[in-house]
Image (tube, rainbow, N blue to C red; front, side, top):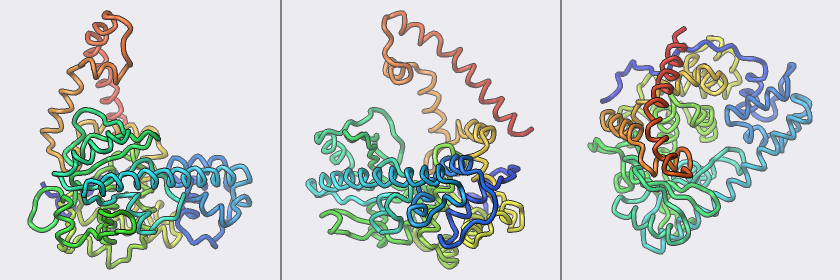
Length: 404
């Protein structure tokens, strides 16, 4: 069901920013030659940067400009270390990506890069300036299982069980990197199709471009798709779950993409890719305004309300979702039975209840480890209803606390 044009799902949460929050926003989005004026607690600023997932972004700037006069030597050094750690992680992800593309090329399977891998391939983000954890690729539905089997044969481990309508069960590279092989892109559709866009859909309308230098059968999304997917992945898929994906990372991606006002407007003008009804015009407009305000160095005015109300509401939600533990718990409780983008709400609820209520031996091992005796198995099965009841009470209390 499409969202109404005036829909705005993000709660209006109160948030009073401390100087450390304003410094992080200033340093993350203003040009590097603009220095901060004012007192900042460096250790607190470091903690804020980590929670908002921009520590390595600040560290990238710290490698070019000395931040110690603003936050002290210890915090500046820690930011540089975060930059170095994410640079090393990015190199590992790129190495694993090459292995995935090589396996796909060996099978003759076209393989498109998504998310972090695509942004790096397009040269949008600097090495080490962004945190990333896994490798995401998109392949035709008919070829997905073949690629997964080839990766398993090459030494990867694949988790069993249902992974979602848009991807196959995740794989784990021997290095510890997770590989997600997607069969579709939730929240994106093209043409008259009502389902999530597949590889064939995106290729047919010219949103995937071959990149033989990257891999024999490799494809990289166009700029228009990168913009649409970034905002969908951030706002629609993880907008109400900042604990799993800090939303400021999406803002940083849009900033690095240099999205213009015309490109923000084009997201909803009817040409592919369409946003499949997962975002409203108000939400898109708010996201665009947040990016413009931060780029212009007006973070304080944006948070205080000297900006369009929806933009203020969104930035407060973004910040509180990562920095206010009580609000984050409230959001986690709200999202327990909310279906992911592109999935049936009824089907998701049924699957969630089956997974929760049916305590199979495999589920017991995954949750608690392998019991030492038969009595251990029996205890885990019998105790499950009481454990679920306690969790339900805690979840309800968190939701109710959000309304106080």
